[in-house]
Image (cartoon, rainbow, N blue to C red; front, side, top):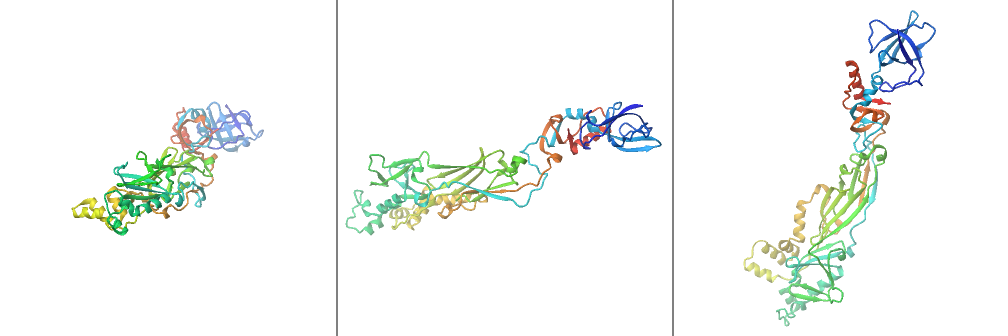
Length: 483
């Protein structure tokens, strides 16, 4: 005969929980029936009809050092017989708790940056949008950037100027005035008509590029003319025009940076499910930013980022630009577009200088450029000679990543549209944290956790039988409760 403690005990089948002294219990003297073992023993209680043990569903046998479930109570010829089944999780709770195992899922601790693919995603998303500050000015507040041949050129033979619309109009009127070409510059055309003078030589042919930018001249690095106390002036080829205000563009930094910072919205389930809800496929973010088009932001790199940083890098000489999109310090998108609008300057003359060059047998790019000028295609000539305006557009169109944008820009219409972030939030169905846990994917000592746990390899070292070790492994690898 040996002692057996029986309990009226509530616990999950896959739990390591053990009864304590506060649990209703009773001790009986028992003996093991012949032919049964220690894992599934049948024990006989010689208590007759003086007690009914059927209310007890759990047992501990000190001699076996094991906990048991009561599978069945039988009454046979005045004796109660308990059919028991070993509870390996409770029996080896200490060994399991001291083991360091790779935990896949847990309810007491989890990593919100690991995507949980256990639950389906609802098909219908919710939508929201955030406005972004327009980095451009109005058409009336933009500026013209022109590359002009001059003796004091700071870009080779060219000097680049930024002018307002009014300044550009005044310059064009002055260049069409025939007095500019017959006053002390080697020409004596007093007896010739104005039309003949302009037909012989046109000062506007020395403007090699013209691009309109949607920013004011003051945003462009450079020097204002006139400076304080100066009368101002504008140099073109061999002529000097007095009294003209403009801005000479610096050759050390001929570009402009426009920065926007947008606070990211959180997925409605981020706080309860984890940071991964900020990522695709749960969150889709689309950026609308003319003229770069409408394209998706790569949310796979969003992590714990709370800000989206947009940097517009604008080449003021050509109008080409890059839009760099960052999450924290990570570049997630870079899109190219033509922000500047190429402007064709009318030419009313035959280019006699160019014609002479053709007669002399000029070849290659020079010949092609002169031909463009001769037919009135100033932009074509500019592209051939200097690589500006039209040539840049053509080259740019060849390398632009069209998968990410709807157009290359280069026109006033392309600058129209909304500057916004569009959000699509797809929600996961309700989860069951108590019974399924959430991803942890980490080596952990088991007794540092509580609640539901699922491990990858439940090979725990015990002093139990082979059958018990296999049972422990099966429980741990299918999910159990440490409590």
